[in-house]
Length: 139
Image 1 (cartoon, helix red, strand yellow):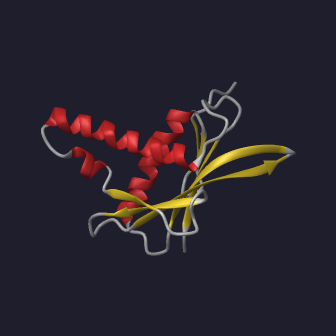
Image 2 (image 1 turned 135 degrees about the vertical axis):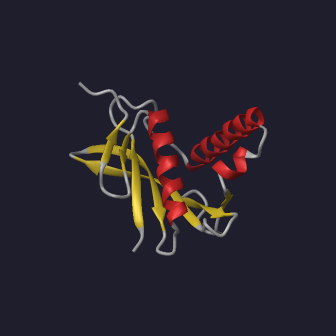
């Protein structure tokens, strides 16, 4: 059964909403940061830390994209953006989906990406296991 994690933009988040292109650019920036770390360490850390290529299916542009694994221990992670209405308040979110045939490596990387993005955007993160992490400032 597929599992989903949500990065929800709430009051106090660094950004109120996000487009699919902005999400892709943020993942590419993450990979660039890993490359700089790898340069300091003297090995190809960006390939180990982000073992995916960003792919799109025809007809899904603007809705979702997927990360295709480059190695056997990684298969797919699907990412998309959306909105939900809660008590007449519209909230934007990023959804990260692990398909049924996703591996344990995909789940680990999915959690890693979600935590990184949640901290960056000061958002509310709903993990794959149902737990919630609050990175937004709360009183």
